[in-house]
Amino acid sequence: MPDYTYLIIGGGMTADAATAGIRDADPAGSIGLIGAEPHPPYNRPPLSKALWKGESEDTIWRTGAKTAAQLHLGRRVVSVDATGRRVTDDRGAVYGYRKLLLATGGSPRRLPLETEQIVYYRTLDDYRRLRPLATEPLRFAVIGGGFIGSEVAAALRLQGRDVVMLIPEAGVGARVFPADLSRFLVEYYGEKGVTMRVGEGMAGLERRAGKCVVRTTTGQELTAEVVVAGLGIQPSVELAEQAGLRVGNGIEVDEFCRSSHPDIYAAGDVASFHNPALDARIRVEHEDNANTMGKIAGQNMAGQSVRYTHLPFFYSDLFELGYEAVGDVDSRLETVADWKTPFREGVVYYLKDRRVRGVLLWNTWGQVDHARALIAEPGPFTSQALKGRLPA
Ligand SMILES: Cc1cc2nc3c(=O)[nH]c(=O)nc-3n(C[C@H](O)[C@H](O)[C@H](O)COP(=O)(O)OP(=O)(O)OC[C@H]3O[C@@H](n4cnc5c(N)ncnc54)[C@H](O)[C@@H]3O)c2cc1C
Image 1 (cartoon, protein in one colour):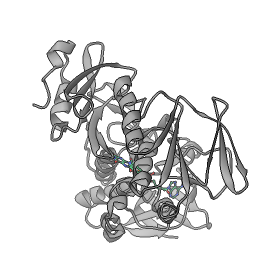
Image 2: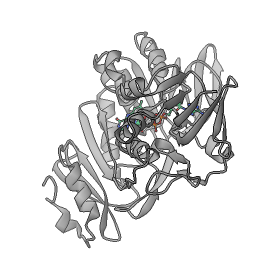
Image 3: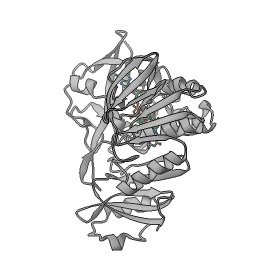
Image 4: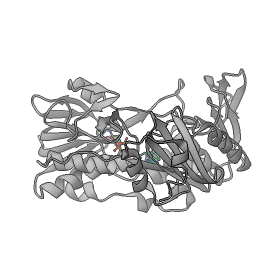
């Protein structure tokens, strides 16, 4: 039985960052990594952006885990014995550990139909499936107007494909962007040639004559050869639950990324942590969090006591528009928009109880740290006082 000082479950960006964190604190302790995908860790963001704009797959690979850890790929851990400090994979192999990291991320919510024609866009293999289809004159139905749906729709359209977006809300990114910006994006996507069907959700899905037919909440149908499902993810907490760890919206960890069991840590998309600036427990599904939290979890597994107090940012590209965002960017909060050019360049502040809880930097760059500082300020803020605060 392989017996590691440090064992990591998950082969994503968090897992990779954790190996670097462990090596910062312990140059020699053995590290094992078990990942369900057949590939070593790679960066996911290029899968819906750079790779569609001509960048090569060679650019996505990460090197941390490859050099520091023994990789066990194409294997899924099916049980964790927290008392015996052992895990078992789906081929029956058993691995021992002193410290364990759960970096299991999340898995896409699924549609109620099993067919090869549905792509859940999460992995390199999903990209490799969709990419050749995007060279054929097919119709693509993208379900959902969130992060993945809006990026993949843009990527497919950039290849000249016939793309229809089906969005139950009133606009693109409606859970994040203020209503007017979200509606503007519907027009913008329309101008780019994407057929936009907003305020229309999916009521049913079936296969007919070799195609997927989506029945919508307005009683219409949408027929397409390929359906891309962008319905968000659910944190992969099954192992944590089975091991008896505290789980809420994700695996609950303390400021040192430690779960309710002292030998087991969790980080990245799967972990729920308290953020001091927001004074709230949050779970973040973004790259900066995966990299920063993964690294700190690794350092702490190897004996350091580094607090995870970072407020992560995230970013996205929508055709020629791009943004970075920090904190709680929830469109249900009060928003104050300060546009330099309406919907093209500016800053949106998200307020709760007259404090800034989040900042959206729309085509406004180099301001993430200033936005973090603003979120840490106690306020109170008025909308008038916020105008012109950023760019600083
Ligand atoms: C297409 C795409 C584009 C993105 N673009 C951006 C962006 O522009 N900006 C941004 O900030 N964020 C972006 N993100 C989000 C970002 O990539 C994620 O936050 C990050 O990948 C999370 O890393 P993770 O390692 O925590 O989880 P994951 O990436 O989900 O990795 C978890 C890994 O663990 C494996 N696993 C799960 N359970 C087991 C098990 N039982 N045994 C073994 N292995 C297991 C999974 O197979 C997976 O490989 C994007 C995500 C996607 C999918």
